[in-house]
Length: 296
Ligand SMILES: NC(=O)c1ccc[n+]([C@@H]2O[C@H](COP(=O)([O-])OP(=O)(O)OC[C@H]3O[C@@H](n4cnc5c(N)ncnc54)[C@H](OP(=O)(O)O)[C@@H]3O)[C@@H](O)[C@H]2O)c1
Image 1 (spheres, protein in one colour):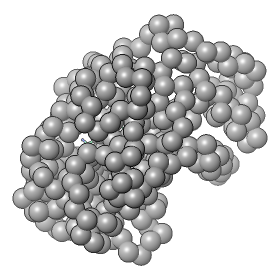
Image 2 (image 1 turned 135 degrees about the vertical axis):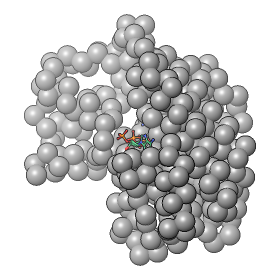
Image 3 (image 1 turned 90 degrees about the horizontal axis):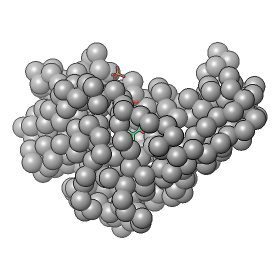
Image 4 (image 1 turned 180 degrees about the horizontal axis):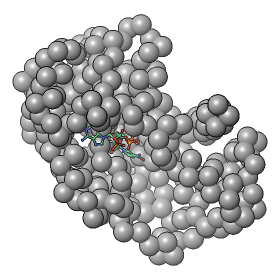
């Protein structure tokens, strides 16, 4: 199966690349932003024509949640218009398009896990641009999968795990938000899920639509940070002695975030037989990989 991946230097793009190269059943064409800018329709056309993939996976996105409040034109250009470009061209070539979206399309007022059909009501520009990307994809190309996920972490790129490990080597006390609840999700697990779904689609299961995927254990950023430090201290010279919980109001950011963005993953289980993942085990593997990268 030939798969074309966008955003290959990002967390999920990189994880797909690492996973697919170990498996002979995939021929992967992975493009970084400089090789394939999804805003550039002509370039997308050129690469689809040259490689004729069976499936396209779009991991490319504008993901700077706070910066997006200022750079909203760029966020929409990538997260809405870029996705639309891919959708139009994939439709033209009759190629299924897999796309990743976010828990931040929800406003976080629910107290039970969000279902795929719950109404979107994003609180920030990033969430709005991702929601508009979903709408554009649904309108332009029926053969699509939208996989919504949350709180991605990995050994690649920037993420909360790396930030906490960095801060815990500098500061004796950390203050971390405890009134935002979500499900940390390893990029590798998302990559496995996308490749698994791609395989099933390739073999004829064509259940298009929107799916939720994340880990099965919801936590606050505070609880997540404590676990990172607990596991990280075996590998890094951490100096943090206490982690204190604070509320969102104590740590104002340019973008508002949902207080509760846990996703219900039952639909993915019943259709594609894919279970929610565990983040705790993945966290220790990722910390080891970050340690190894630092030693090199
Ligand atoms: N990170 C999270 O916690 C999270 C949570 C839920 C959903 N998501 C979604 O999951 C997906 C993957 O996220 P991630 O964490 O892997 O993101 P990431 O690490 O920020 O990677 C995104 C990649 O897309 C590239 N990119 C940006 N603009 C592009 C363009 N115009 N054309 C092609 N590539 C472009 C970026 O390159 P540069 O870095 O050079 O700009 C980066 O390599 C995204 O759709 C994101 O919205 C993320």
